[in-house]
Length: 492
Image 1 (cartoon, rainbow, N blue to C red):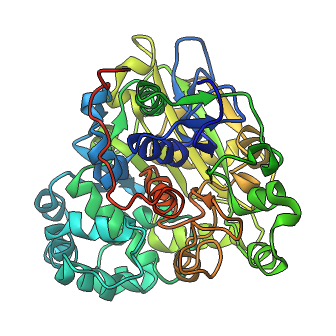
Image 2: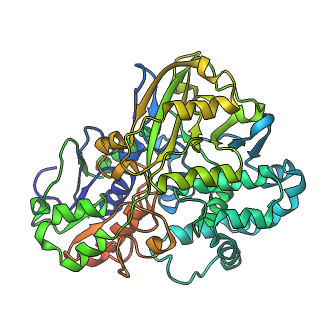
Image 3: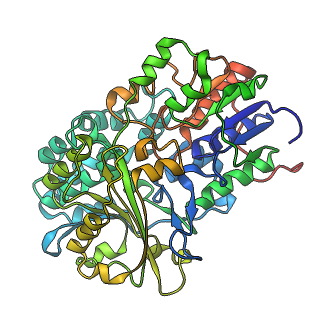
């Protein structure tokens, strides 16, 4: 691209790339600048253990990439991105060879719950019946407004989702299996299970398993980012990697600048151009525990004691509800859990393209105090071994990231956290600061577009898409949003 762009996006994560694609669809000249040598942010994949073996550096299972309005419009299949959808989206092993199994079908899932089968259908059914309306409402920029569609499903979701997941599961279920299944799903929200709205997090994730599954990207998450970059370039946009932005004055004269960065990074870039009130509000913005992450190369699939866990895409390794409550209370209090909750994904069980024939990969992390450099390898492998005897014998190589190393790799992972800030009810309604439109900043033409804005974390692209829509209206007077092109423009 020659000359000055109409818009610049800082950060080439999924939200930054989504923002760039929306701006480019409106005919703007768009430049994305990225600190790392490779675009993708949380979608990056890399050969972390051995050459030829693909590991997802951050995000791996992507239910919202299948369900979010932005990616439905982007049309992943037309861009060559294949989502691999396990018939068992997630599983939760328990002691004595037991397990809770979430299947694509709600009815099949309930059928395996014995005493809790009817309760599971009654709890999940009303939300699943209007699942797309529920997802679209919570991913929209105006989710704080009253809904106009899917009202019965949303009302049921709100009634059951506002309490903490301990209360929700103990109210509805009698068995360890059903309680653990929903609680494990809730822990994707990075909150202690005693916090309000964790019930909603578990209910939403569980519903997504039946609605769209918890798919993986064939060949690694990086392929989704690469497809977004290619689509942007087809529209005349460009991505500049290896460029770290330290001062927003670099873009003086550019009408619109969107920032896929955490709020504190924006404050540093803005310098003295921000009022003290905004700085104070950002200083109060809270982050959650970080993660310690391991990627393994294995000789065989994980030998889970329960045979159906071996077929799952994602595995929640944490024991009973009470064990998970105790384990997840520790990082927020600055402690290390003796028996941590391990969130694991088994990519090569469903996508053999990621490793040479006869080898397998495993992806997993645990929560640790924000910024902790403790090595959790032994604790993680002990937990997996507990439910998969012989697991250690399958390990060929491992690669670990401490929480500080996660942040060094991607500065938006503050203290190693992967959610862009705590997803409490207050911080979801005022994310990151108490403003009606939190994409707008006090600097005209400068917008936040990261997971620190509504609707929050996960790979859905909606933070960037929502911010781009605001910028198009504010700066360029465009109110009728042009659709994303499905194929390369004829003049590309």
